[in-house]
Image 1: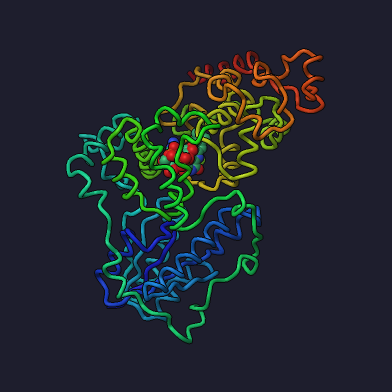
Image 2: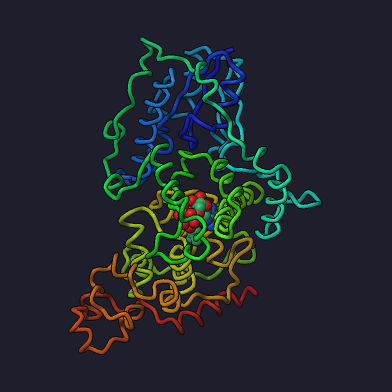
Length: 478
Ligand code: FAD
């Protein structure tokens, strides 16, 4: 039989579970990627690094598939209708793809499966994005987990049962590439991909940052990280240091196989590598949470915190979004996301805590801002991260543990190297004042060319006052 493979957040033709199944179960496989109008039209920003990242990666994938003897049909359409229509025009027996766990994707896939079934065609989706699917790691009594550590222990036990040869082994797609369908002449859709401009999007600074794209970019990022993996545990908390992998955008769009990453980290088995593997477990954990507790989308995991009396001051929110809170570590972090679409994990925790516990703004406002700005935006991880910081989440930071932004800054950016990189106004501020520049005497302010209130904002809230208010807010609900 002939089939169609639909690429989504798995932009690679190697070690791809669904593609492998399509290739091994069919005589011939067509490939498609859809720039989904349903998703793109809803994006508020028409210069979006994610769209450009996907575009570059799809272009690379198309070339790679052609070099392998196949092709990639690239459409700009509503996927829900376009996939059944393409399946009909190619007259394939089945559509293969990889599972996507986001609620809107589940609805879309249901609708595609129904339309295909009405035509007498099958729809098959496979686990590819996670190491373990949502119901593969369950408690002894068959319940989903809601606390990370027991989940992680069960996850690792399952992986260790078979070692690196089972759950994290590669799917050798390349052995079956000869089954890829060659470019179909005359089929309008098989022309090259639509340009970004034709889809209503502009270029961004993605390539000048630079953020390497596609499978080649992912390998480049990973190869640079590999020699640093053993030091991950000691260096991952310092945003001025290259301590983390910077692979998240590739994990988001599947330009590298999660099995490859987990396998190498597992085999390496050092303190640093285990620490890094732990992050990949978090990734699965939040897919698990999203699947088993779908109310987390838009609602507090802990229902008693659903109706906290947030202040939701629009001006304070604007100051946070625009990096002018007067707290350098917060503002530098917000500059990082604005300028690059990335933010270091330690900083995500700091700014999320600051927004919810210092500005008393609903975590959903911050979640939405991140969703619009993060290159690696992933509903499950983003929601999990926000609810963790806001103390409303499953295995969250207890509400009474409130990050002091000045102490976090002293601890994780002691010399202010990261702060100075993103806040040139503070470049000449002496290190002893860099974390709380409002404490700088006026003579020092003049000498540093940084007058507080003029060159750099005064803090919009006072830590001690904000802390008391946050404690009171949560205490009411216990
Ligand atoms: P590394 O430290 O090198 O980690 C390796 C990989 O593990 C990452 O690439 C990522 O795929 C995964 N990972 C790491 N930490 C987590 C985590 N806590 N949860 C889930 N997966 C993780 N991560 C996202 O991928 N998308 C998001 O939208 C997102 N939003 C976040 C929001 C908040 C408020 C917080 C506190 C964290 C969020 N994270 C999110 C998790 C984490 O901050 C990023 O995954 C990480 O900073 C990416 O950098 P890296 O690739 O260098 O990570």
